[in-house]
Length: 152
Ligand SMILES: [Ca+2]
Image 1: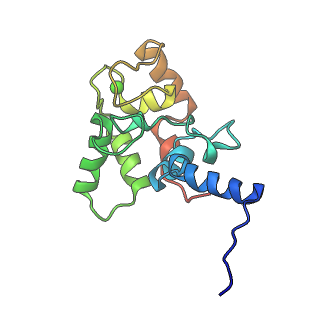
Image 2: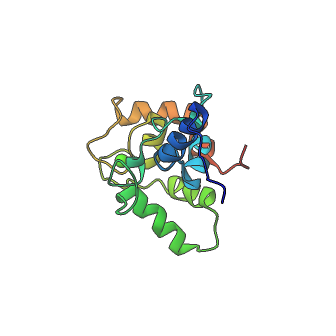
C-alpha cells in the first residue's frame, strides 16, 4: 500500500493560513451591499478586504458582529418585518429616508451615515452641529445618496 505523503510547502502553509483567517476576513452579504450603497468604499480601493471601512458596530453590539443588534440594526430588522420580501438595500434606504434617530443622540441616522459616525451608538456622534451637518448633507444630495443601486 502506497504511503500517503503530504508535502508541506510554503504554498500549502499559505493556503492553510488563509483558510484559518478566512472567517475573520469574510464580509457578510449585507456589508457588501451597505458599504458601496452608503459610499463608504469611496477612496478605499481595497474596501472588500478591509474590516475597518465600516465597523461591525454600525449595526451590531459586538465588534465582531452577530447577535445582538444595536438600535440601528434593530431598525433595519423592523424594516424587514414590515416588508419581508424587500431586498436589504431597499430596507436600508427606507430606514434612512424615514429620518429616524435609532440611538436617540439627536442626529438622524442618515446624517450619521453622512458623517461616518455610528447610528446605533449614542456615544458616537458627528462633531458638526446638527443644522450645519444637515445643510451639508442636503447640499451633497441628501438621503437620495443612499438609494439602493445595483451591486457593482
Ligand atoms: Ca443618531
